Amino acid sequence: MKNLLTTVFALSVACVTALVLTTAEAQAPNAGGAGNPAVPAVPGATGPGPAKAVAAPASPKSLEAKTAMCFGCHNIKGYQASFPEVYKVPMIAGQNAKYITAALNAYKNGDRKHPTMRSVAESLSEQDIADIAAFYEGLGKDERKAAPDKQREPDSQVAGLIQKANCASCHGANFSKPIDPSYPKIAGQHSDYLFSALRAYKTENNPAVGRNNGIMGAIAKQFSNAELKAIAKYVGSLDGEVATIPESRFHKH
Ligand code: HEC
Ligand code: HEC
Image (cartoon, rainbow, N blue to C red; front, side, top):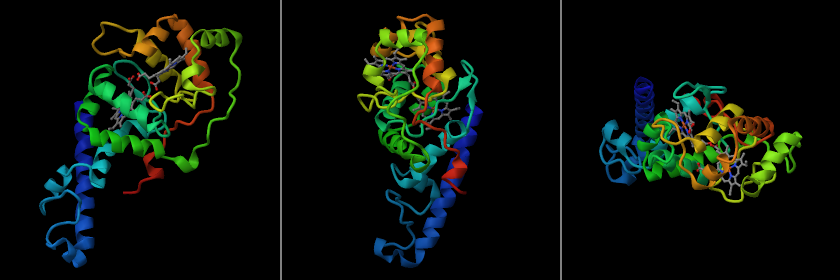
């Protein structure tokens, strides 16, 4: 894992360096307005060296670098995580920015224990998180459909379960219009991921698995794993607004 992250990071740095150099070249002829033609016109960049430009906070280039780290998992259709459990990496394109922010902060502060996402989130500043969340909320807007107002009815077993915990009162009637933007859209999310997430809200005293959340903890604990699996299967089978958008569709290098 360390290796993957290192490689991804190295690649993204290389990519940003190339971009910065291109920008500097393109703008060199008319950079006089910036006072010093030797300085690339990158906001926040204080010196001519690419290394300093890469470290510039919150410029469009650093968003580029930070999201490059995510693409290897969240922008590959059907990509599976293998540790600590095997399930498909969640779809985050089209998810609410406020929820993405809340989730990343939960990994960062340890409320969510998933080890890879913890180390990813720890590397992000508040500004990085805000930029990345806005990016993913809008990603693929033109090719995604709005979820239907009314979803296919569940079978009677699942109907009873979701009624018992009134899932719709927070996640919305179609599981895609949560009452608060810091709550997730869950319709159409991968079922195996939903099941793993629901179990994680129940899991305690495990260093690598668990989600400490007052609301969902109380809800998930009312159900057996078999019941959670049935709920996850139904919710995942619905039409939703979250998607995996492959990098080739929005990004050409
Ligand atoms: C090595 C693969 C990998 C990389 C790289 C990665 N993620 Fe994740 N991400 C995952 C997995 C697996 C999960 C599910 C973790 C869990 O079960 O809590 C996840 C969960 C998330 C969630 C929570 C989704 C939800 O529905 O609650 C967000 C948001 C997220 N990642 C954003 C990012 C961002 C932004 C980046 C890049 C800065 C990134 N991830 C990089 C694998 C990855
Ligand atoms: C009182 C409001 C409320 C109710 C009722 C509720 N949820 Fe949630 N749900 C939330 C919030 C808030 C979160 C985000 C928690 C976090 O940050 O980890 C969440 C998160 C989730 C997640 C994790 C999604 C992801 O992408 O990781 C799943 C799955 C989920 N809920 C399913 C359900 C189901 C199924 C029900 C009914 C059995 C339900 N919820 C009822 C508020 C609610």
